[in-house]
Length: 173
Image (cartoon, rainbow, N blue to C red; front, side, top):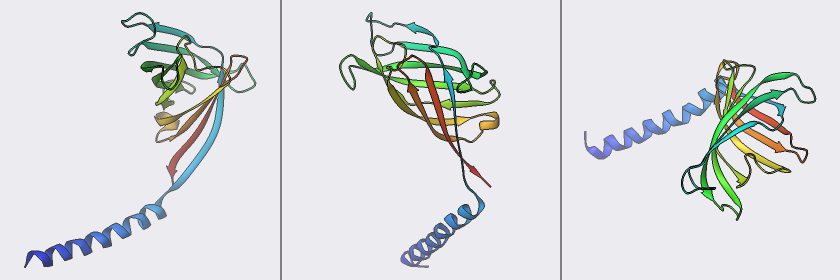
């Protein structure tokens, strides 16, 4: 068979099979969405300062503490994580950008929500600034959160407490 005839047959076959995939995938699943929140106070933090002394790329910041049902003091799980300074004076002087990996264990380590991404922090603070909102991607989960994606909206209020609002999406049948 001449090569040009084979190429036309292959392209036609690819077009037919590509056209059928979305129909099959769409009819088998749809998106399930869920939004909920937890709150927490200032967390226990630690910092490892790499050379040069003071804020610099590579510094690590760890944190952990309990999370609560909004409006109560009923512990519903925990938050723990680590951030690494990736840039100094970015996006503005006096701030730094940190790559952060956060894990929410709700209620324990068998059901986790993993959050990643970057956020802006004041160089002199272990936390994001008060009166700020930060949005980061949810990268996955375990247990009852297996297969989730979405985003986490973090609000740090002027009084010092945090609201962590989860916007979860997963494929469901």
